[in-house]
Length: 190
Image (cartoon, rainbow, N blue to C red; front, side, top):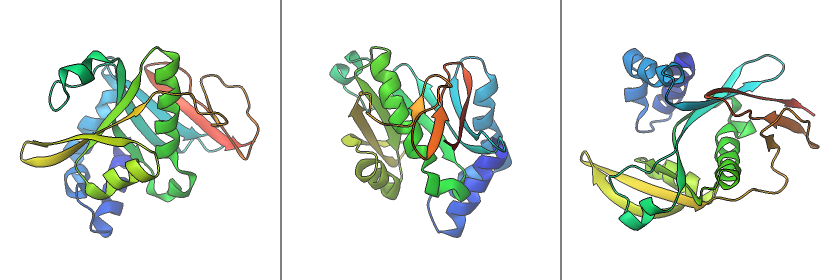
């Protein structure tokens, strides 16, 4: 995971995108990757079923943070997506979007009403808004940085090729997403 984070950071730096300098630092990348081993954080890992290459990973938290969200927001059960990293060489496969869309269904199936996320990069906010259909609910300054707090109602998306079992699905690619704290998600030709 550390290598994937640093690869993503290098890709961001080459394109002049904010945030890459921080993630490129070995100790920062390592601290994020260590979430998978801490036993408290649900880390979901997307791998290619043929070569077991790491396509991406994300974390899901069961509680909305206290900062920036209203009491009414926090009263509605939600999952919070954080620390999503994808292999820049696999961006045509849209692993980040697939993980986010799967999270919508997972939230709905587990009684949550919302999936929430935050970001500090305006271009990334626009991607989450335009491609993944999250809405900006609030924007706050946190630690001196404008942070966009986003949400989307939980729902099972029909036809999404991401499953909570290893069952095959029709379509070009097959994905599976078992429900374990550190989870292999595999995909490959159907």
